[in-house]
Amino acid sequence: MSITERLRNARKSKKITLREMSEKLGIAKSTYAAYESGFRTPSLDTLISISKILGVTSDYLLGLTESADYDASNAKQYLQNAKFHWDGVPLTDEDLELINLLLERIIRDRKKPLE
Figure 1: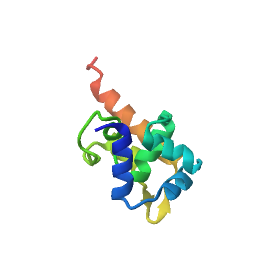
Figure 2: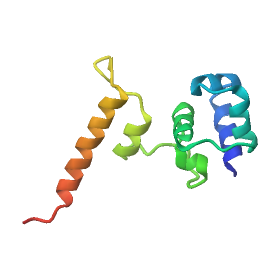
Figure 3: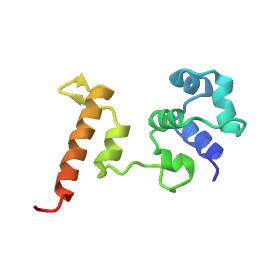
């Protein structure tokens, strides 16, 4: 299945119209329609935004995996694609970036050989 088919199928499965999708992305309806028809290719940033809106992985949209679902056990992937809050207070992208950096540091330190 091509990226155009995956975009269209994922959007339709979420019952999102072309207009709604373009509004969520902040682009013209014709631009998004061109992604689904194959006349244009979304940028990496746009592809990531699309995957978040549709609730699928960018790997799925690119055809790198057949599974559209996120691996909830993969913290890195989960943090990139979920909306979080702490006791009702939304966490910003900057908050999530700090969490990512902390987790990367923890893993990097674990991989260091003992001196």
